[in-house]
Length: 468
Image (tube, rainbow, N blue to C red; front, side, top):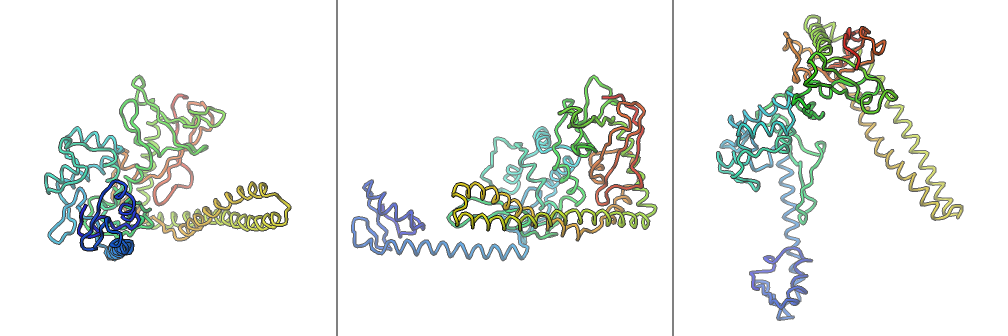
């Protein structure tokens, strides 16, 4: 076996040395590196071979370090590190991203479908059924760009993972996210994904395909699993309606044999574990529609017509709520810090007892294992609690954003999934004042995005539904 030099065989000194010193002689292979004067049949020519292999590896290591430095500098300047234009975009003459109208329309539709309550799997099935070219085939046919996953025999092969990745990609918001992936070293090519906090995010680097409101709605929808019911219908309230007592999401019951006016929500805990744990909190969907629509109209009207008074009221109430939350979390932080100090003292005493022979080695290991685990949990909780308190202290009232939305949506006629997630964070359903009564009053609290619950008292609805 003849090569130009040793670097052609490999630049990993351990591997190349293993092959030349052991594997080749084992199988009777004669190896010759012409420029480096290496010949396995000549023992004298191999004396400097280990050093040459080491220099070859150093070259790779130095090159890798320089490339990483260049990539880091480009990322900090806001340049996109990816080589291919993502689906929905193409590159102009200056290699900058511009919108590709044909695929861009598909991206906008995907976000719109998700905002309406459709999950990635259902969106993928819809695109397949409509024979929309999948991203790899589209890029190949329009731009001649190939990809390792290209399959021309399946041009409409949309997958739920493809759609989900698009829905989570900030690039469609106009942002560039650099340094999202990296490798451990030049020897390990497996990619590691970094959390967003460790990435370099540069906002507004190119024209967005999706506006901020649609993006926020989609992210809220993605937080909740939205399965189709047996009637192949989507629940527009999915994940929004929660039980006031146990805090879990409520379940919507529907059936082909049941009139739409009898569709109703019940507590998931009650449904699963029975009345010993929680109660039904029964409320009809049509009644909830009336309550939510009326309250949404009321609050948005207040925001539009009495803007200054509305903003002052929300700001004052939010400040009080934030202060209460901060005090509660500061107490928890103080308790965690105190316990960490106690554990330090326990460790010192336990170590002294072990050294002086008051406890055996087995006892020391058993006791210290439990305390060590508790300490590690506390060390994880303390930074998280500090970060939460700082975020609350820096919290800015979102009243202006809510008022701007209220001025845009001046004529709300019906509730849609997009509208619900644009305005509402959660809907809390209380049990009736008198359980199983047809005419008992029932409290429904509607908590809005940015501003929370609005009103001197919760909106109360007359629930005329039959008991569950």
